[in-house]
Length: 412
Ligand SMILES: [Zn+2]
Image (cartoon, rainbow, N blue to C red):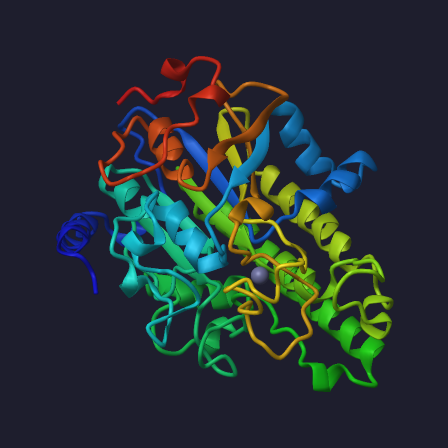
């Protein structure tokens, strides 16, 4: 059910968007004073314990450059965090019971944007005249009208992925809703980018792994890299051909790899040398590969652009309270032998992370403790555009990251 408040606003948005004709898709209006440019890069389940040694070894040079030029820290996440649940809080700065997307499956139905009961950031920005581009962002299917474009991500349904849960439909094989707004952009993408996978490959089942571990693991990792290459091409195309003032791009394969290929020690629960001894570097390598995606995005960034990298939660090996935790083994599909997860009842066990750089953002600042939370992203983005925070939003502007918050606000 869509709440009356948000439903009314949606109608207004659609009316407003009819004023923007397709030719100006993604084009900033030249008559107005330029609005700030913000690029958000979402990484599903980035684990600081894994990326820190990689940063120390110089294996994530692009993320290291953002850290040096900006502010970063842990991001307090929700209880029992998972992607749709946290992303919908990132979008709305409200609790799951308020925004309505409490998990992958809500009331027996795969989470989708029709369930969203609070107004998301893309709608607020669009109504204020900010051009918005979103691609591959989880929990954005079916896509909604924006002042720009939207291409859905995780939870998109399609052929061989009928329930939409953690599988990879191709753009041409999407079913049960639209994956691209505006509709004509779909043909343009198929022509110029190709028929890319939306979301990441499904994890292999235990029975498929048995006796073929190395072969199945390597084939899965190769598919993951193919998907990442396709998505990088998509991002590159969109940033080149449809630049928007606000852009949100996301990656999701890293988390998936962590669930069953986390480099655990033999004393961890679930250790299986036949699987976990094969490619112990598979999970760290996901972040080295992500860093290359980030490098491709940063090529489109100038000093006047804000870059925000956000992870919705971390991921950790199974814990001692697995037996009694009400959220134990609720992760994803239940067919893969998972050795790490994130939907622990205490979200502080698996914090997300936050990295920001841009005009007026402090350099080399580390946020200690849990100064930043998943509720704070939307208010901070609105602050950059000088848009007042709606009353329902529970987070606060991360003013501590700005040199002088007045300078960081756009003059409207
Ligand atoms: Zn996960």
